Image (cartoon, rainbow, N blue to C red; front, side, top):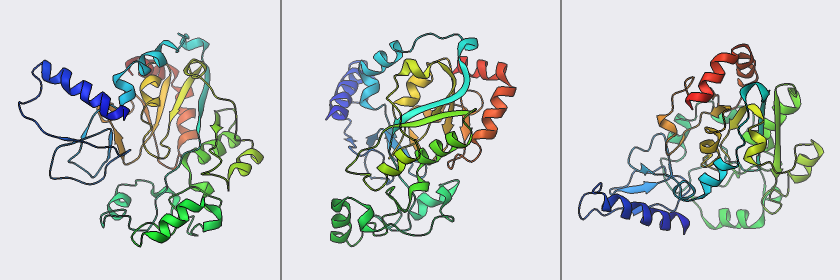
Length: 294
């Protein structure tokens, strides 16, 4: 509902300023992202790299007071006072590549063609099972013959290591001098099979506000279930360097940023993150200029 209200407000403003053609008709997508080209104008907050038709627009949080409050919460911290370490806090969210065809024949083969690091799919080939998942997910898969049946697109006990955010927490445990990354919450109903594993590995921590992030020189933007649709925008105002995971999902505005000028690009599987953090420490002046340009 928020997306539609925001789009209605935005289009009225555009029309009042003569920036829309008379009689324009279009659709507003309720999807978290779109991957299909439609024979009509579709406004969406994110699309897959291979879908050329949908028009990206800001998510509703960016068309209201939310983003202003988030930016006000960012305390100004001088560069030399920021800890030279990457900081991340966020919820357990996940989307993994899987071999099943979901609804459309072009999905996921065309997706996989743009999945630059393939989500480590060659390492993890065992599908999940219904005991690992909420019953509603299994029932939905059983009821729809064309839906995903392998369950590998959902992070569960079998696919635990696939998750972007699990891998980030694992890197934090391996490189504590470089990375401080923890999960601030794990939805119990959806991730019941892995919540205890996250606790056992000490991947959980308290929620952190934007002001807490501003205490560090390096911040991480990583996809969850879909795009990192709001975090990356206030991070660009933090005075810290954004390390952006490169994935096939393209939210509004991000394609206008230039890697190594506005952010540090990171592989989808995060394998190069430690090396790029070491690079950042060696090139402190360049990173400070990058944060200012962002």
